[in-house]
Image (tube, rainbow, N blue to C red):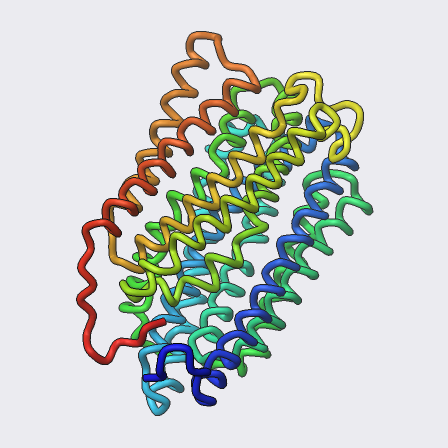
Length: 426
């Protein structure tokens, strides 16, 4: 142990550099993927009529829910490989690869079963756009599995490359579809082609793994990893889906454009959660870094909310054009605040997952139920507007994050750190 005030040993500095470089690579790749998704979203708002953009935005909201199995497969694969011995990995990689394909097939089957309900729920003219959405989700799930193989074997440079390529091909394909076809269906066709190409790249970059039987435990691990994240993904997109279902196409389109501000505020600090998640597994590190991370995410969100408030009614017209802003006026700042609360909820949920705290996941699902019930009650009484949907989502998120922060404060106040003697102080 180094003396107080003494410079760190060379081995410590080397370990810090070895951790910082891959973290920076993956964080930059993630930021680039989100930036490209933002460009696609803004481009769609500009190129499509409000009714068509509202349809596409609602389908993208469904997509965010549909990619949860990809995240679950990635998380389960990374954890399994991280605990394995080098001699076990060839067989384990083959089993995890087979589990990835089974998971992708399951996503496709579930998607086909959901075609009818989605057409009715989102008031679509036909099933074509939903079928192309399924064509996006199946290869997207494969990419998630390949990300897990790379992450678990600590090939972070390749992981960053696959993520960057995926962002370029998926969002670039969507933009190309918009420019060529000018419809939500054309955008989804372009995204599907980009995802198929990304899956091929992921397979090649991850070493062209084969397949093997014995994947049952890996599928169960992926299902458990997905369960906690599904509630958060649903919460992040629930207000947009409810707005599409209950409001007129024009108002739903305006709500979708305003939701871009929520997505930006949610995307921007995500790197904090990604980098800190492994450190949150240790109680001592959790006590030290989590309050700092919460403060950082809150600060970034406060700056974005303040900028949006200063822009006022001009914020929507800058993103979507002159035809947006009549219903919301200068209230767009509420969406930036909503995205900030989503980012805080994600960080607190990751902390709960790391601490094996099931209450954190239950709280997210309770927030989803509360928001859905509140919107349905107002809709039944003909009291639902663009602003009331936003206020309900904001109030629910404040309650969720406030409860999480209170539990965090109480836990830190009463915790006694009892970690094994050999556990690293991250």
